[in-house]
Length: 375
Image 1 (cartoon, rainbow, N blue to C red):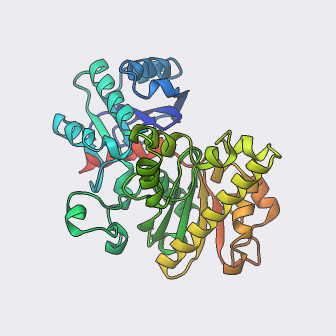
Image 2 (image 1 turned 45 degrees about the horizontal axis):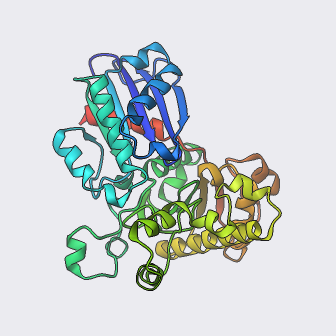
């Protein structure tokens, strides 16, 4: 680290693209607080070839001039298979990541287009890819393996897990609040447009609810989550639904949207007094509570639960509804603390601590850049 750097981080989600600009001195310290920008991703942008270059232009307008001349660019890439950490972008890496696109269709292709657009805009500037799957690189073998023949496991049909940058951010902040939590048995509950849970022991992922793809696990805004695989067979074989329609259904029209018959946005569902909206809220809370209990079983006990994500950190009533299903295991929230968003939200009588953390994936992308330069 011999010279100051201007680092631009880019984070493509299913509904937004976020960017942050960091000015770093020669010792790796921030010269000033990060500048941030965010834009919406429209459904029609998902496969538009020119969308990534437009995203860059829209984001740079919101950022300081230095962001337009970065010396490093870091990208969140959802699927990196079993790569244990960030990697410098090369042609070979892009080929490898492109092959994973069918496993994360909402996220992978837009992220790779953004890498290509950044490469065209800033030729010669090193780009770093940080992977959500890397957080789960040390999953327990029984968690990694899906109940399928070994030949399929060897071909890559296995549990990868996602939301890794969010989970890393949660743990970084949580340990800063209470260092004893670094060795605790924790369930990280990331609830947003996409949602997943992670069982953490000694700061490492042991088990998680998402599997081969970000479609698995608890129900989400528009994604089904775990579903009887026989449903897919029935849709294809008996109802003769074409595979592209099934794919669209499971990624775009299921989950909370499917349950409510309308919106998959929890903010809208909380304001909706209709019976379908109430069913969606109840189903969601119960499945998340069951997921927490399952992750606790993976850990052999539980010391704390941590909520994050747009719903997990932003909706006190959803947290309360989930916790109400888990009072039997010692999870009890303090009403006032929960209403105000914590960070500590457990009641005095609780035997399991409860926390609310606002994730900062962009800062984790910065750390990925610094980690590669230190290597």
